[in-house]
Image 1 (spheres, rainbow, N blue to C red):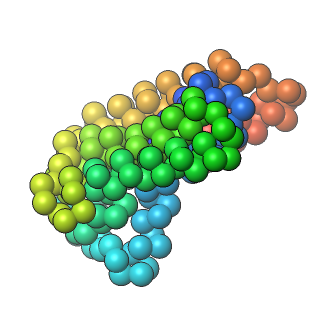
Image 2 (cartoon, rainbow, N blue to C red; image 1 turned 180 degrees about the vertical axis):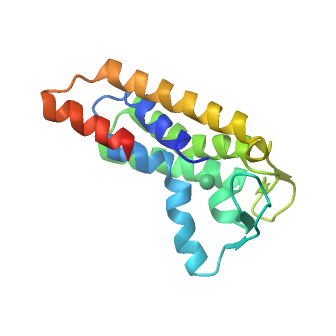
Length: 172
Ligand SMILES: [Zn+2]
């Protein structure tokens, strides 16, 4: 999934208004932020296979540490614990953990069955919406709109600059 992960960050702001949007984006995208590092270290592996799905040519051959179900859960727990240490607020800690884990759930919808359940590359899951471009694009756009709707309901721009920078961010 692409912009859908940012929708989670925007939407989460409603529930933890004191946490910066940047922190929420990092949480929702954490697995994909870690992924390039592990690719460079050759711990995880991706190849480009044109046509492997209709929306992306990436063949996720091996990514047990960033994208297995078990590790996604563990990363969520870790992020939650770290947040707890930083802010000492249970609700915030839980929501940050959920943001991190949500990444896997959203990827599950769009990836072909390449997401391992356990790091050992056992069973692999994925509902494959990247092969149904219309559904994937509309679904992801709706999710994005919902996220922004929740976000703008909880925050009010202090001035015009604030309003335009939100629009710029959305455009980006
Ligand atoms: Zn991902």
